[in-house]
Amino acid sequence: MTPIILIDSLAEFLKEVNKNYFSFEDKIKDTPLKIESGHINIRDYAKEKKAPAIEVSLLKVVDAPLDLSGGESTAFVRLYFVTYCEEKSGAWRELYNWVEFNRQALLKNKFIAKYFRLVNDLVSQYPEPVDQPVPTWVGFIDLEYNIPQVQEVFNYEY
Image 1: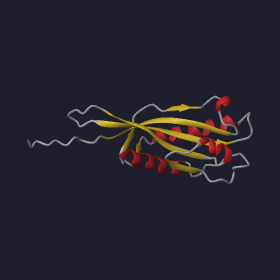
Image 2: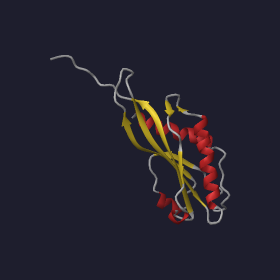
Image 3: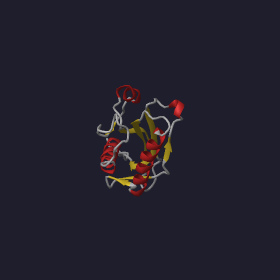
Image 4: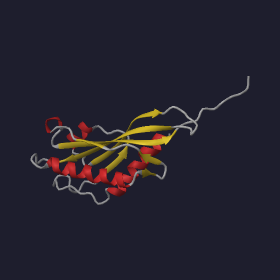
């Protein structure tokens, strides 16, 4: 439940950050930006020209060993950025600028929902153009957030 609150809150944060987003590509210029938590099928986006979109996906949760402070868990999240551009020579530039714009916003706002703290250096990745489902272009950012860890319940009855 807590990781779901994190990715839903991240999606809401990104909606605010990207409220003025627009694409230069004529075929999607009037398509509203879709930002959601969960999973989207990027290949379907390529076929159906549903871009632009940001998907906030939970990859895994890792629990740290408990100590006297109670310990924390780490949620690993990936943000997928999907855009559409038929111009092959400059399409990468729109994607890179968009991902970088969001990366900077995340670094400026390390707390999400006043509860979850960004704990890692962000890693932005861009698959090679030969691996892109052109004319759809995909990039992503990997994030790590501290989230509260469930505390063990002790039963002292024998």
